[in-house]
Image 1 (cartoon, rainbow, N blue to C red):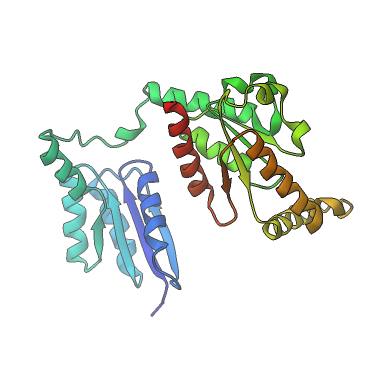
Image 2: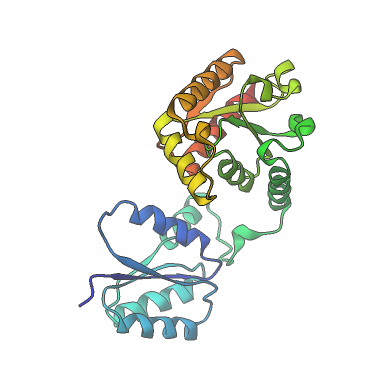
Length: 273
């Protein structure tokens, strides 16, 4: 019998919500082997039966689903029970509870969160803006940003910017080589936008930069990975952030998602001033 768990993620939409929930769930359990089998846009009983037939053939199969159609969800739950397959609905009870609390019937519409409304187009605009203002590009437009990220090389500025853009925030990121690398418009008006400094521990930065250099097959730039130089870079960055009263985040042990969540909190405080 295999020790690998076969996880079947069944959704009537893109499956994005279910995937994120499973990622959060599996993070709570260490030392398990699993294989994810994704089935988005599952909207018929016939589709469900085919998936369950496959699941029944494998050891340690577990079904997780997000299906808003009540009849289809019940069909999946009943068929799974008949076949002896563990099956868990992620949104069903929550939607029902909210429906009772709000005294309002749920629409039960698949992909309801993907409506092409104003919020969606604002998010697309934010992504385009952020891509155009990556790594110090279009500095003259920095004042149009919702958020500006500053930090020395390899402090996750670009991935954090992209994540924020997907949340709808127009984000510029600027490499901090020294204080002279900060745009004049930002020095003259440090609060022109919500500015956040990103920093990290020196040794962590050494490892990241060495990996970067190795991937690029570059070995000449010793200064870039020198621990003493990096320590000075970080100390100078801290002094700069303090000089302009910019809030800072140490990203050493933070994921991009955690860093972005902290930045959003800072932005919300900035927006209230």
